[in-house]
Image 1 (spheres, rainbow, N blue to C red):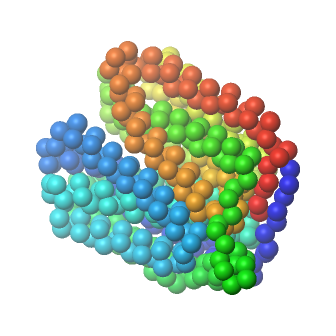
Image 2 (cartoon, one colour; image 1 turned 90 degrees about the vertical axis):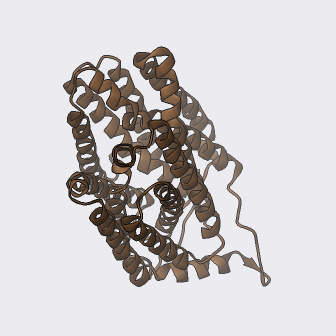
Length: 406
């Protein structure tokens, strides 16, 4: 396995400022997505089918934002791009505070989807520039900050929503203002990194195209992307169809909500452990396989779940998969990506996630409507296990020919 080392940088964005930005933006974002379906249906009296279209537009625009953000990161100075993305998100949330009727809410949600994909890809791409820490550690700790923000936001949103939806959006917008100010002040080192990166790809005064990913690396990345699509395709049904199933079994809805607090808490604990013991897994691929296997097993356990305790067990197993596989995949793809193409491939990872998020509820709903929940759980487990059976021999065949960029 060939290894290309990057240089240590004396000046780079401090990791804690990157984490502050992620924490504040994910708290702000978590004020919006949990209430969307309830607000549109109960307050604006929008049908559930039309709400599904609204959420699909949000996910589709997120995919587009990820593609554009990744493409531009490799070609342009990312500093003004991330500042613009965060400030635009703040502006839209302020507008939502005062104009949250129909159909403007649909428009705002579609725009925030695009900007969220843009910002997410840029942050992941900027994270690849950090040389002070191993890539595995950086992506694990970023994922920790994101989920800490999600837990904080989802715990607060219920109280704020009952008090005032206007105040909720103003607080969310203010959090994005904090993230914008943080980026303006503390993300400036990415300018020098970008200039150095651009100078490294110049030849006789003419800029070369971004270095393509080696063929073997590309094949492995495609395998990871396909796996991520399948995982999200199944995972999204936890956020949509599982609530209906649990209520149909006589489990109160607030117990379903409690599962997500449990999910966030386990992720935070798992990320602390992974940060403290970065070599708990032999390598990133082992971490990905472990996480993907946990996802599959969680759906196997759902086949037998009939009470809250069993659903909590399924959520615990699912969360182990989420806490290990999700941060490990972009980290490994970072190592597989040439320095001039990192934004492109981080964008494609976000696109894979977005595709699964967009089509997951539709896919699960179609199977459940025609065959029921148990056949869906079997399909979900089988689909994820199939991806493991595909990427294991793929990695075994390619691993000695992979070129890693540190």
